[in-house]
Structure formats: structure tokens, C-alpha cells
Image 1 (cartoon, rainbow, N blue to C red):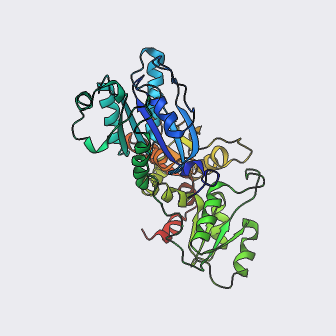
Image 2 (cartoon, one colour):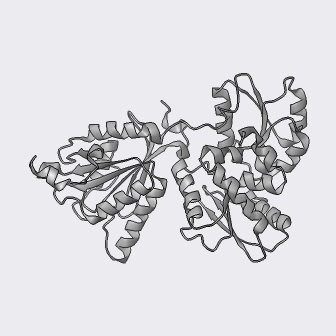
Image 3 (cartoon, rainbow, N blue to C red):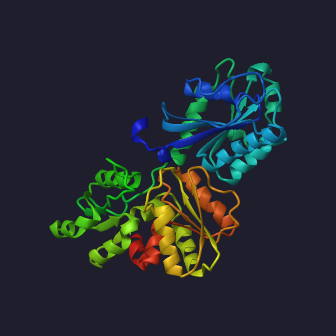
Length: 403
């Protein structure tokens, strides 16, 4: 089992609790985690914003727990709170719907359950406050046809049913936290792979960025031999390898230089392209990149990143990609930037979205960003695929995937 510190936030299973005000979500969350994560009160609407906690939850392992505001909150402010709760669905790997047994199922519960099912999120329905009803009353209050296998009965007041909830949640995690290939299916034991890691002003001082770390670890886990160098030493690194490398993986922003150095018979790709495949967005990103050739003067392009960082001179998202896109298309294009959780709901103003590799987003949120764009008819691609396309080497950079 991995410990919390060894698992990046984007790799942790996100378990979210939903329900109406005073259903007892926060009480169950506190019992579920064994911590006073959320404030508990008899006053409806005590939880006003989503509350997040990344933790090691035995026997589940590293997870992120999210407690949400009541989905039935009222008034202008209450509606905003409820909307923030619905937004959490976009990043939920597992959804727990909490319903008060004494009041039973209402339309708010049915609406959120429908949204959960539409997004194909694994879920459980937890009827709390069973201590307030007799054994004969509970089935009447908890009638949701066709959901018998997903229903649990608990009492937060009596601390009953919480262990069973953990066990059932752990069973759902077998699918939600399934292993996905990064490079493990592309290499064999003993393969040499050369990783090109530019060290410039934008590189984090004293460390590698997350995708680089993950590729190195995945290579080691699969018995491959990673050779790490800067782009300035790439030729020397290739000359020093006796056996031909299985592949070269580069930071996307030096694609052109690396392509000129690496012989054509050695497969070449990038960390960003690998992340698109890893996060489940490879095919829509390949399709979306073609929209670059259709851009015209005045079109608006969204450059989006899943993390927040201090942008420096020469930043890839705010400087390098926009400059190359203008040069490639020959058109005056307008750009907007988004980072972290600030991904717009309405994307209709954009002709194209170019997203980072999404290493800091869990797979569910990364996939849902692409889904939202596709549903609104907006082309979306990622940094590595866009940069290889504009450098005329996309076919080469995806050849290793045999598509």
C-alpha cells in the first residue's frame, strides 16, 4: 500500500459526500475519517463550502475526502453553495449520497443521483438516522426502485454501519483507483529510455516536475533503464548508449530541437502526450488538434492548466504556445488563460482549448473537462499534441502507440 506522501494529489481517489441539509453528511464524514473534518450542527446549511482533506484512510489507502454543502440550500447564496457542491461531481471518483431516513427520499436526492449516474460515477446511497425509525418504517422511507444493491443503512448518532460503509467504499475503489499505463506497456525489462529534461527559468528549482518523476518511477517499476539528460547534452547521451534506446521522451517545449537530434528510427514522444493517454484524453486531444488549421483572425483560444504556479518569462502556457500558434497560423488570435480549478463552464466563446498534461488533476476531472468541451462543440487538445502538430512531427510522436 502506498503512503499519503508518496501519492500525488492527482492520483488519489476522490470520495465525495452529497445530500440535503441536515441529512448528516458531515457527521458521517467525521466518523468515516476518524477526524473532526467538518463542523457538525443541528442548524441546516452548516457546511457552506466543499471541505477537502487528503489523508491516509485505512484500509483504503491515500484518498481525498470531500464534504459538500446541502444540495437543497435555498436563496441566492444557498443556490451558489449548492452549485459548488454539484461542481464537485466533476472530480469525484466515488459518490456517497446521504439521505435522512426520517424524512426519506425527496426530489433533490433523485436529481443528484441522476447526475451521478449520468457521469457513471461509482456510488452508494446511505440512509442515515435509522435510529429514529422502527425496523418496519425504514424500508418505506428508503424506497428507491432498482437501487437495492447500492443502499446502506447507518446511524451516525449510534456510530452504526460506518465500518460496512468503509468496506463497501473500498470495493468501489477497485475500479475507481485502477492502475493505468503510463509507459509500462511500452517498455520491457532492460530497455533503455532517454528522458530529455530542459533546465530553464521555468523549471522548479531543485526538483523535477511531476510527469518526469512519474515516468522515471514507472520505468524503474517495469525494469527499464531511464537515462536523464538536458536537451543540451542529448546528443552526447545518445552516443554513450551502446544499445539503441527503446524511445526518447522529451519535454514538449524543446520538441523541434530534440526531433533534429534523435535518429528517425528511434521512437520519440513527450511527457505531455504520455499524460494525455494516462488521463484518458488521448483520442479527443488527437481529434481536437486539427482545429489549429481552421483558426482565423479574431478567434479566441483558451490555454488551461490544472495547477497554479508563478508564471515566469518564457512560460510555456502564457508565452511560448501563443507565440508559436500565431506564427504557425499567421493569424491574430486572442488568448485567455485559466489555471487550477478555474475551468469555465461556458466554453462557447472559444474556437480551441489547449490544456496542459493535467498531472495535478485526477483522471475524473481531466476527463470531465474534455467531456464538457466536446459536449459544447469546442475542440480541445493538449500541450504536447499541439506542439508536436505545429512542429510537423505529430505522426512521429504517436507512432509508438500503434494507433
